[in-house]
Image (cartoon, rainbow, N blue to C red):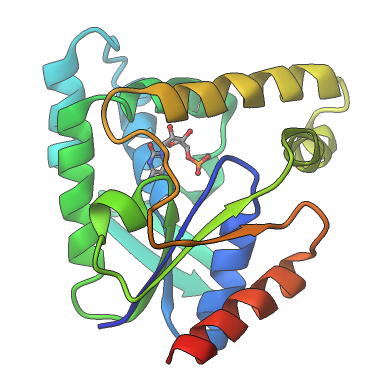
Length: 220
Ligand code: C5P
């Protein structure tokens, strides 16, 4: 099975790029951040304190994930329930980097990721996909963009839901999350050594996908 990995920081365009790229290639798209987020939805619902690591890990060991595409959008099912519309809730976003830094959570999630890729060609996005999860993937990319540009992209999404959101707060949160993801002890975000780096600060999603496709065809 062919695997295309796309790693990169938050709001680097990974998800839109991954989704469109998968459509063009006829591959299944999987956003690994959604797996961590789905587990966090159950942790919050069950009110499990973040200090009780065993209980947190247990949620991930029992997590059943299915990904479906319906009407041009990706639906994410966790333990049989469609959780797509809650993946980006504020309370989930707040705890996900803390939960994702737990070694056994990452091990459980690795198994889920590898199982999802067993029988299909996939495009998977995340932070450590090309480095840790699929080190032998055929095509590896790392997407990035200036932090101000990424914060502005996220701000534009958030302000539609809540007009009181401030750009400065979004920027500060993003800088904090970048730091948490790249300085954590377990599987920190890194550019995989054989990945092609694309800075898409001044590129649209379509232009970024075009660049990736060019590289894939050149290497095929
Ligand atoms: O990509 P997204 O912003 O949805 O990811 C949410 C969080 O999940 C990240 O901030 C990171 O802490 C964690 N994550 C991770 N490894 C991945 C994907 C996401 O640690 N492969």
